[in-house]
Length: 277
Image (tube, rainbow, N blue to C red; front, side, top):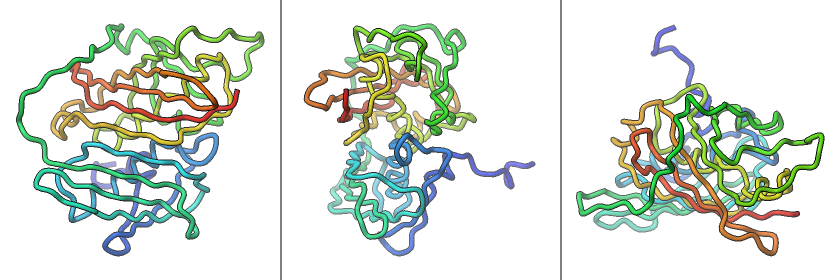
């Protein structure tokens, strides 16, 4: 089979949409990226980002994306509306909605822009951990289908067992550090980086040592890398790290960083999660 007639990567199939007029697109959920309830939030965010990337009025590359998961997305077709609300000289602001049967399930805003050469510095420190070849691959449970599309190698904070033989104590902190990449391997781009920014399971699982009802309400991704920097990553593993800040009144926030194999900070994310425990 040649590269010309090779089937698309499963991720590209999952985020595929088609414009039906200037600002409206249609798409369909993909069972390969299903989560406990509805599709994996990361793949929904990636589909929204790709909708802007493919719009003829798009300016530059993504700088930030905020996705608000207002309601469950059912299996089947959906429609995205993507509109630029203001375009400045170096940045552009977008509003997006995802709807099914006339009901809005997801809203989002995105900022795209042109990056300029300026003074630069990095204050975060990349975690010092062994390489991916020294970390043991771990899979999510069968009922989390999207996890099978990633090669996840936890250094710390691995996924708790679903039904352990003995009650498990909670973890003293919520930190997970892991190597990850698409499975099968796929060259990194903004869409896949978006999805990986949501590949960190809810921190309450780790703190409580068990699965509890939980779900992301809002996710924001900040893109620090250029398209060229992402292309330079190829299909190598990224290093990810996530932790929560406070659990209270049925909600918590968790932040994450994604680092390239060359040590560059590619993206950071922050999300608000509800839980019952």
